Image 1 (cartoon, rainbow, N blue to C red):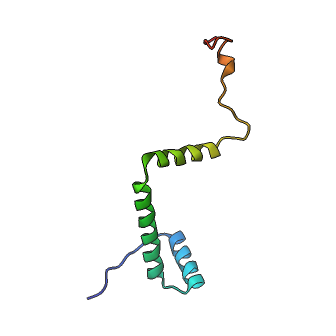
Image 2: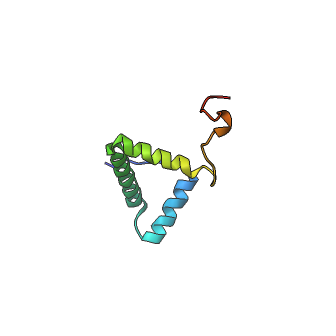
Image 3: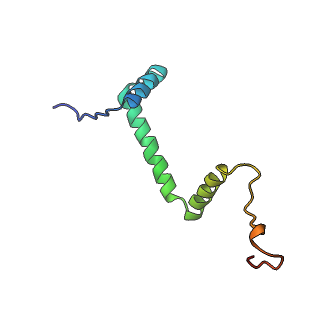
Length: 85
């Protein structure tokens, strides 16, 4: 009886797999196993994190997209008493 097969129809995946196999000397099936195990472990760790840590990461990711020198000040919308103009 033959082993189950996994077929991935992606040129990029094929090229990456062959390049890694050449660089590491590992067979492609082992590289796929390692990659899937690593991704599974990463997802499990993320899901086990406290929600505040996930939120902090999301906020940091958002801050990276903001140009340097940008502020959140909206002083031009309010008068000297803090009331809307």
